[in-house]
Length: 108
Image 1 (tube, rainbow, N blue to C red):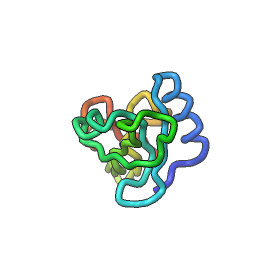
Image 2: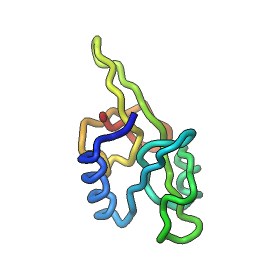
Image 3: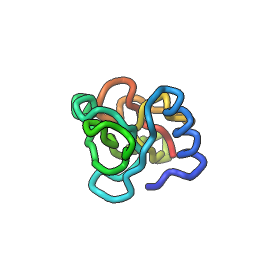
Image 4: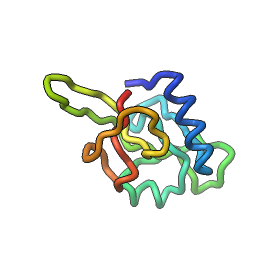
C-alpha cells in the first residue's frame, strides 16, 4: 500500500512542525511512511528502523516505520499505515498498531 502524494505532503508538514522529519521507505521489509527518530525510541515504541532515509540527521537517527494496518469496519476493510498521530491527517484507529498510543492506524 502506498500513500498518496497529498497524504505524504501533509504528513511532512505535520512532522516538520513537531521538529521531526517524515520519511518513506520504498522497499520491504520495512516499507511505508515513517518518521526520523532515534533508533532507541523506534525500537522501544515497537517500530523497525531503516538507514539511508534521514540523510541530514545524526547517525543514531533513522527512518522508523511501524507497518501497515487493516481495520474491519462493518462489511468494509480499511487499509492504513501505522504512523505518529500528529502526522495523520485522515481517520485514525486505535488498537491496530505496535507502540504507544501515539502510533495509530491512519486510513490511506
